[in-house]
Structure formats: structure tokens, C-alpha cells
Amino acid sequence: MKKSNLHIWDQYEQEPLGDDDVVLLWSKFPRSNDERTLSILDIVEGDAENLRSRYLKWINDIPNIKYRQSSLFNELKNKGEINYWWLTYFFEKCNYAKSKQINDVIKILALEDWLRNNQFALIKVKLSNRNLTEVLKKYFEQKKINHEINNFEKSKIDANIVFSKYKKIPAEMRAVMWLFLYLIKRNSLRGIGVKKWVENKNKILFATYFDNFEDDNFQIHRFKSRYWGNLTDLIHGINYLHIYDVSSQVKNINSAKKISKKFNENSDDAHCFPESFLCLRVIFDVVTDWLIIRKKYEPIENNLPMVDGSLIQFGLLFEGEWKETLIGPVAMHNLMTYHLIKKAISNLTSQKIGFYLLEGQAWERGLNFIWEKLGNQKLVGFAHSTIRFWDFRYFIDFKNYESSIANDLRLPDYFAINGPIAFNMIEESGYPREKITKVEAIRYQYLDGYRKKVTNFIGNSEIKIMIVCEYLDCNSTQLVEVVKDSLRHFKNKARLFLKPHPNSRINYQDRQYDEFYIVDGPFENNAREVDIIICGSVTSAALEAYSMNIPVICLLDSSSLNLSPIRNLKNTIFIKNSNDLLTALENFQSNKHLCNENLFYVDENLTKWKSLLTKCDVEYFE
Image (cartoon, rainbow, N blue to C red):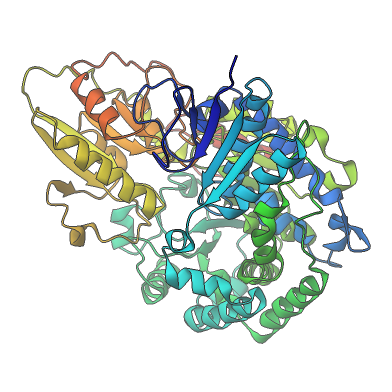
């Protein structure tokens, strides 16, 4: 029997197909139900647990590789400071924004397994990512698989000319450029709140982002954050270390200075930024550490171990990232943040307890190391949002860690988790059970006892739809365009609301989205007024809406893994394009979805948080 050909594409209709040819789409979804057109993401989802487990095990193996004269882990040691391995993108594993090639690794592993059971006469590859193409080519050659490789023209790949030219500048030079620009931009934060920070005797630290304020309190210049809600009302005498980034509430550094000054004036709490401690000593330490790491840099392309059960060498996909992390701007940024946090904590009296927002970022591991080194007491990492199956940042394969390396990783004393779904995922991942604790979902306390009535759409009655945008502006733009395209053909009356992400840099008012009402304020206030939520596959708002009994339609990202927090929940609707959305809306005559379970721990009395404070010997006030 004649074997068919396999075409691996990341675009549609690259060339004519034979009668029995099969198309495997790498970063697109099939346009129709044609059985001969497949998506690699569907294959990935069919073996998700195994693929994730193998990748996490692989990350454990990397620090043991031979690197220069020793192991990679030993080479990245820095006497008296954190081992730089813990600050690398490799360990951070942010496949959402920083290390998108992780998604390609998972796809390649799925393809390798799939090809063991599916034989083809010829595999024809046409992808825009040259490194990805080269990795597949080497594998096919090793396995003696008949193949043809084609790449797009360079002009089609380098759509962003400015960024392309920037990346051609040597990594070391870009690191120095980053440092100068950072000092120019952030120098105006130097000294903000330092006097009060140094002189106060507060014993409790909160490391938190400088956004997401509760509006009323923000206007009267008293700090109250939706990240922490009423928890901070229970505790008196707090040191706030604020991580600044541009947001809808804090649009620039001058605004951050004015707001933090008011916060310091209106309470006994102390408010500082890491940049408040910018000084020549910190800059010297940063540059010194960067020069030390720079001397140790070697390409890693041919040194990475194989993933268990795989014959594929993935080094080429990570070489660029490795250079950025070791000698480029990422290295300079990581070291600057680390030394600034160290300077800030060292200027406090010994702290009884600290809290930080746990998202698996490099600065958090730096904080953990510094906290213990300086002799402070308990530290709590709070997973304030949702934890998603494919978000690798939250998962570590403790079962397979070599003991000497595992013992060097500083973890918070408590990993505070806000709901049963997240708790079960972290517990099953092998995270030390004694360090996991249940706490109330502070951001989602409004869900306590709240269930929206089941909606029935009748005839031509107007449907109120809210589109919830995401942190990444590119994802939000795609979502809005899909909605616009679909609703051109929707026959019912619809009123459209658009909720930008609070940290978005898009000015939606300038985008001529006349068909949308732009809304702001708390998500829960907006959501109560609508019948359907349409969102991307990353936002935690999907799980919020699901918990409120509001129908949720999630647009999957065709280039990424399914990062939705409602990925495995019942009665959820995932769409791949505007046609899917139109079908979902037209069939949405009644909502049979009923969420009768608590997906977050909610209790306005914060009983679990109070129990944790008692366990840590921290006095709180009712």
C-alpha cells in the first residue's frame, strides 16, 4: 500500500496536495473538519501529562551538564550570592511570554511520539522559524526519514525591522545599553521613601506590584491593593516594597513618585521601590557580577541533554535565549533587580514575616535567597491568581532533582494557594507538602455566595457581551479582531463591552473600536452586567466568570499551549477562529452551565489567612 506524504506548515495552503497527503499545522488551526488536516496542538493535548512531566524532568538535568571545567551548576556559583542558575530563563520556564520556544519543544516531542505510529513516504517541512526547521532536519537525518526542507524568504520573517536590527547588536553591547537606559529612566526613583524605610521598626514586609489599587483608596492616597485586600487591614506596621511597571493607574515614573509619597504621608507603613536604593555600590556590584558571568559564557547549543525518550537535540532553540540570559540585557536586568532587593532588605530591621506575589519570576527566587541569608524569619509566597496546567513557572520536578542542587534552591516557608484546583495541581507535582498551605483567594472574595442566575436568551433580545483583553497586547488585538469579524455575521442584537487589561499599553480609544463600549474598574462589577464573556486562553478572568455562572467563550492561541485556567472544566467553550465564535453565539440560546462548586477558597473573615498568621506567631487585629 502506497504511503502518503506529510506536510508540516505554519501557514495555510503552501503548495498543492496529493490525494492522500496529510497536513500538520504547527501554529494554525484547521479551517475545516477535513480529516487530512491536523493541528499539532491537538496531538499535544492527547498526551499532555506525559509531555509536561518529561519537559520538567529535562530542566532538572540541565544544570548537571558538563560546562567549561565543571558542571553548569557549579560554574554559575557566585561566592556569597545566589547561584545564577536560579535566575536564568531556563529555570523560570515562562512559555507564556519570555521563552515561547518551550511550546515548540513540547510540539516536537509530541510529533516525535506521533511519528512512531504514523509512517509517511516523505515529510515536507515549510516553517518560518529557521532554528525550528534545523532541529527537525537533524532529527529526520538521524532517523533516516525521507524529508524536504523549505524556509520562507527572509523578508517575510523579519517583519519588525527595528527589532531585527536591534537583535543584531552584540549581546554584551545591548546589556550595557540597557543599563544606561535603565539608570536614566529609573534614577528619579532613587531615594523615594528611603528615610522612613530605614528608620521605621516595622517587622512585616509585603513585596507587591505597584498597580491594581482599590480605586476609592487610591484617590484618597491611602494604599489598598486588590492583590492583598483586607489582609493588610489585619496587620499593623508594614514595609511595602513595590515593583513598578506602567499600568492604567500608574502611567509613568513621575506618577509613581507622587503616589508613593502620598502613601508614606498618610500611614505608619513604609513604601519604597527597589530603585529607591540605586547607588554607586549597587551599580558596581551589578557590573562586577555581570563581568564574572560573562567570562563563564559558552554556547550551549551542543551541550544540552536529551529529553527522556527523545533523540532530538534542542540546543539550537535555546542558544539565543542562553546568550541573553548570561551576557545580554536579561542578565543585567536580573542582577540589577537582585542587588536592589538585597539593598532594600538589608536596610530593614530583622523581619518577622514577609509576603510576596508568587508568579515564578526570577526576582522572587532572589528574594527567597536574600531573605534567608539576612536572617529574617518566615516568608510566604502567595499565588494570588490562577495556576494553569501548562504554565511551567509554577512547577518543579522535585522527584528527580539531584539532592545537592535541590538543597540550594531557596523556597518560601509557605506556598499559599487560593483554591482546590491549584492546590491539587501543586500537591500532585511533588512540591514539599509541608510547605503548601490553603488561604482565601483575596482577589476573588466577592465570589462568596455569588452565583449569577442562569440566562435564557429569547428571540431577538439584546445580548450583552464583554470582551476581556489579556496582558500581552498582541493576544488582545487578535481577540478583538476575531470578535469583530464574527459579529459582522451575527443576526441577533448585541451590545459589546471591551475591558482592557490594566497593564495594557494599547489606547483602545484611538483604535476606532466604535462598536465597543470601553469599560474599566473591577472585573466583577462589569461582569455582573453582561450575558457572555469572550476572552483569550490565558486570562484568569475566565475562571472568575465561570465561577459566577457567566457563560465563557475562550479563544485558543494557535501558536501556544492551552494556558486557560478552565482548560479541563465541564461545559466550557473553546473556539479557534471567528467561524467557531459565530457558531457558539448562534447556538447559545440557553445557558445550561451551573457552577455549584467553590473553585476558590472564599471567606470574608479570612479564617485560613488568620490561621497562617497564628502559625507564624504574627499578631493580627480583628
